[in-house]
Image 1: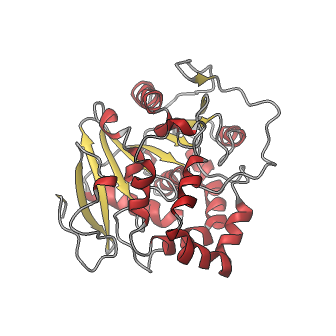
Image 2: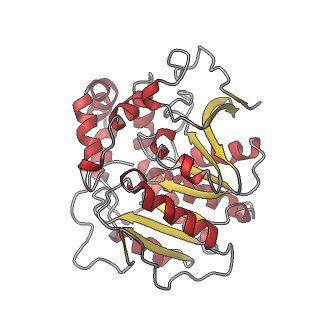
Length: 343
């Protein structure tokens, strides 16, 4: 069922020529294709050790972890899938685009891979998927399968998170723009991507081209519209799942210059997750794993390798490291400003 570099059927819209284009290729990792509930997923795998599942955000795919995969693979067996409808996984009109459908698919993926227990790292919308995934397991009395979580600026109901823009882009005129015009506006993608960084001078060459390679796959923006149409119900599900996750040691990781999911919302999440800690990467924006990958990788390893799986109350002081600032709620910052829409 699972084989490296297995061919993707020509009938699938996700296929681009014979292989993933060079712009979106990450050397030194295995590429697998596996069918889950009739949908073919692409998943990257590297390393050995405890299992670690990386979940990308909105408009991203496994390429998002290009600065993290090989480094984390020194300590973990790392899995980085392209969620259905994203990157080089299959597009299909039957996909709902909900957090629950992606979370359920990821559980099935890890089952198919024979992985019984795995830590989670989820970014932005992928952080929402991680919360729902853990909640689904908790409902089945299987929460022990997720020993620890790192939520990197996860979507949540306590950040205004461009909700007006979501409503606009979900309306008929907005859907027309997303599906028919946005895919042809390279400058719009470039501007959008720059806004995700705290310091745009840190953007590595080829980054925009890599993301664009995963978005030019036919029907990518149709799936984006499906995601946005369910955005508000997904936020409600996140809130409903949080009470089930009190036992999971959780790191809430933010960039101090995140204008997409405000750092202030981290403390609302911390209040609702008894076994959680907030850590802020000073100067980073919404994608700290890209912008400050060395610091991000160190934080991930420190937390996952040195945090007990149970019985830990983590509200004590945060250990400082380069570019890290302590987890005190920011003074004078609230969520009344309009954030940019991203995930």
